[in-house]
Structure formats: C-alpha cells, structure tokens
Amino acid sequence: MVYILEGGKFSCLGPIREKIAKKERVLVELLFLGTGTSVGVPMIGCDCPVCTSPDPRNQRSRSSLLIRHESAHVLIDTTPELRQQALRFGLRRVDAVLLTHTHADHIFGFDDLRRFNHLQGRPVPVYGTPETLDNIRTIFAYAFRPPQPGGSKPEVELHPVQGAFRLGRLTFTPVPVLHGRMTVTGYRVGRVAYVTDVSHIPPSSRELLRGLDVLILGALRFRPHPTHLSIEEALAVIDDLKPRRAYLTHLSHEVDHAAANGQLPPPVQLAYDGLRIQVPDPED
Image 1 (cartoon, rainbow, N blue to C red):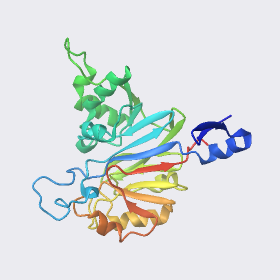
Image 2 (cartoon, helix red, strand yellow):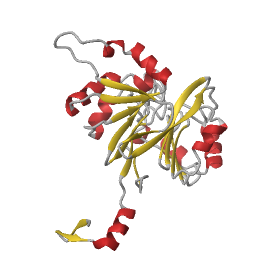
Image 3 (cartoon, one colour):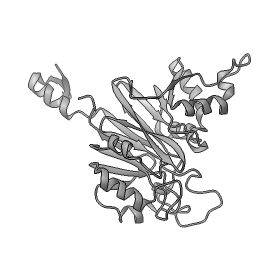
C-alpha cells in the first residue's frame, strides 16, 4: 500500500491508485551544478556584456551534474568549484563520481571528496575509463599514498568503466565521444544522457543516444571551435537524435542566456547553474 498526505491526514491510496501514483511519481532529479566552459563565466579580467551581466544565468561555474535518485546520488565530474557548488546547492551525499575526462576544469575539485568521506564514513567510488583513472592516480598521487599522522586525503575506490554498470537501481552506459582527438566519456542512464566536451559523436555512440527524454549536450558558442561543438552543430546533432528535450551546457562568455535562449527551437534550452529537471524513474 502507498499512503499520501491529504488535508493534513495520511490516507491509503489502495492498489489501483498505488499503481497510478507509482507511475506519476518523479524519483530522479538532474541538478546542474555548473554549466560553464573551462575558464568559467565571468571570465577573469573580462568586461564584456555577459561577464558583467546582472542575469544570474550568465554566471557559470565549471560544468558538472548531480543525478539524485532514491537509491543513489551520482556526481558527474569534480570541478574546481565543487566546494562552492556543494555549499550553494546543499550537497551532503555523494554515493559515486563519474568522470568524463581529466582536463583540469573537470577534476580539480577532486580533493573536496574527502569531506564526503567524513560525512558518509566510507570511501567514494569513482568511475572512469582505465586511461582516466590512470591519470587520476598520477595527478592526485598523494591520495593513493598513506597520509602523514593527522593528515587527510580523499578516500576513493577506482572502478574502470568498460561497459554498462549499476549504481543503486540505476544502470549507466558509457558513451565514447571525441573532444578534438581526445576520447571523452558521456553517460546514459535510462532515457537521460550527459555528453560534454564534444566535437564529434561517432555513429556507434549516436546509436546509444537515441530514444532519449533528455539530452544534455556541450555547445561552447556560436562560432566554430576545433574541440567543441558550436551551438549550430549541437542543434544538428539534436535534430538527428531527436530527444524529447535537450539542454546545452559548457557555455562560454560569448553566449548571453536570454538572447541565445530566445533563438533556440522549442525542444532545446540553455542550461544554467542551479537548473533542476525532474524525470521519471528509469526503472519504473
């Protein structure tokens, strides 16, 4: 049986209404912790209209996403602003981290995972390709050595991603894409996919991105770029894949939120820091 609060009292839904309630329940939240490119927005030393804009949607920390499900809270990438993002949005639980690649803007908050060790009393599982995890061992070598007495370091368990894997009741599928000549890992969970830092999606990976309710896709700016999709190129990808909704992220200071959002076709919007999207439980 399922009980709900009605008029200040809990009442039983009954088996038929229980089925309806389960179908209508929203159990997954996508929280955009950051939506900016590698230098963030505002950019240091820049007085352009976007960097000086009063619109909070033009203030972009480095790109990251939190997937909240009743069985797992999953963080994608540990940006340099992870501490500020956690404080701003009230993060107290990280059950696992998925890494897309090891460019600085996606991993330099890695040390802040130790606070979640303290809160949760256990290591944080970290998932990425074997190459990504090898880079993590090198860049954060101190995290894999015994600490000095009284010292503190992030406690993590590294899990190489070589196929689909489960976290709680969620199944994640890696989606390899190209960031210039570098391979970056996107992730699909249910009918949601997150693909950032991308300039080309191979045909085999495009097939993994069909039938989506929500596609989150990196699109740097309107002008072409050698290692990122432009907004025009991202729209062409979206037109091919035909998700029900699409959100553009990893945005530069050349993109004013209000002006650019007004030019996008209805299924597509610009993401912004703090945007929350609710989607049905992919296991229902």
